Amino acid sequence: MLLASEKYLQISSGFIAWRAGAALVRLSEAERKFEEVAVRTDEPVVIVGAGHAGFQLAASLRQSGYEERIALINNEPHLPYQRPPLSKGFLEGNGDPQAVFFRPESFFRDYRIDLVEDHVVEIDRMTRKTSFQSTRSLNYRHLVMATGARNRLLRMPNAGHDDVRYLRSLADSEAIRERLENAKQVVVIGAGFVGLEFAATAAAKGIAVDIVELAPRIMARVVSPVVSGYFQARHEGAGCCIHSARSVSAIETANGRLQCVILDDGRKLPADLLIVGIGVVPNVELAMAAGLPSQDGIVVDQHLATVDPNISAIGDCALFSSHRYKSPLRLQSVSNAVDQAKCLAARLTGKIRPFDSLPWFWSDQGNDKLQIAGLIDSYEDIVVRGDPDQNSFSVFCYGDGILRGVESVNRVGDHMAARRLLAACTTVDPDKAANLSFDLKTAL
Amino acid sequence: MPRVIFVASNGARREVSEAAGASAMTAARINDVSGIEAECAGALSCGTCHVYVAPEFASLLPPPSEEEEGMLEFVAAERRVGSRLSCQIVLTDELDGLTLEIPETQT
Image 1: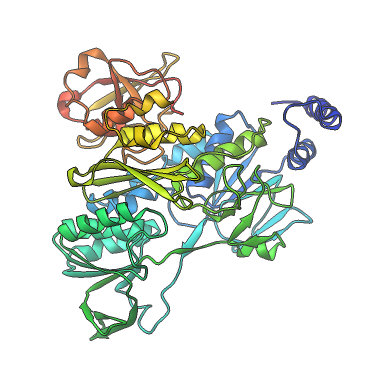
Image 2 (image 1 turned 90 degrees about the horizontal axis):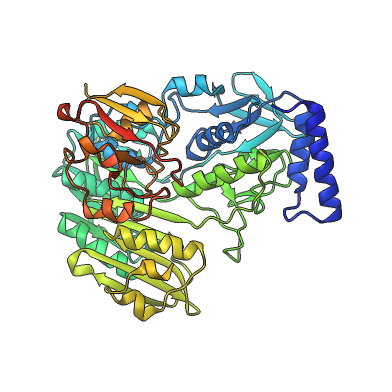
């Protein structure tokens, strides 16, 4: 723990370096502000949201030696938990929430992370104050928006019925687990990762599954047609029926129970459970109300700082800039949340580096493991390594002749190598990538 | 309840007990053993729950799957003979006293 005077010296030297432009890493406005505020106050770093980003930030701040107060605002009545198992293992398992909590209660006690179970209703930037639903309030030294995203809602009659469910929270997963006990016919709207993971889990239980997708192919926004086609065949092979380029026009109920879903072509799909996975909306309202620029996400720079030097944003809610990509982007993934949290923890403890982590994703669907390194959105050419018929292949996507992203299906080694290659902006000759006898590690 | 002994890179030992059927990764997480990040929550996708299995236990474990092998090639710390991913180690009564050393880094 530094004395205030020592901190002041540090700031002073920082200023000199910044003024002289001599330091390799210039202190950003936000960093200097944080240090200045830190000298003046014993107020906590307030983290709004206890999902992957919020939890990781609290943990990483402590790991980085940050000793001042941390308040982690959690708007759910559980310890902070991991979301990936909710659409897979937790649905299959014994339903013990212990299996999904990041850490036991003792962790938060031992590391002096104040878990505040409440909802933030207002941020006053002038007085650096957060107000809660419970009428409590808390002043902050630095405020971090880790508010995540919420499910986009289906809007039509009966969409609010008890048998129509979304899958995002632990409570959602628990409710769906319970319903799966007796479900015979499930309809899933939206063939994204979560919808398909759930579909595979339900099909494995012997439940009849229909999947309705507006786009002409499944996972259209995030994977190549090769991977879409492979997973379409795999889900169909597991007994799912996929209705692409279709939408739901009505939900019918009878005697208080869900009866069927009617598609835009008039087809009726009987259902006793409907799972909706049609995308998410970032939780930006709090930030917007506080006057922070927000579009499809809270706008932050490459240091994850908003226009207010006392406020940062990380995870699913942050629209960030990175030297890797031309335009700002918002990502919904565990790795993005964790990496941004670590980057911000480093900045708040004096180790400033721009955020430039490579995005990566995974989705376990049935017995297949899909892993994606980079973004599959700006490519013209692909080469396939391995054999989809053997359920083991990777798709290397090239744009302007440069490797942009790699999708791997049941090829963990390819994925890990691709992550290293792409992180280092190293490209691989397409002919070599396609050649199974070529060891990708030699390209690193 | 099989016991698992986690040995930190500085030599500090921590003994925990967890129900058979749980993974060694879960045992570490539930009991707040530091040094096992488990970023992907046991989906065999991140390689951040790497451990070194003590030699006397290594032969008692089923060998790693092809996927785990693929992941172990890229763990952050040095890969050694006893390197495994703790999310893939299922605790059993036979493994009582399983001793796992935690590497210095996971990322």
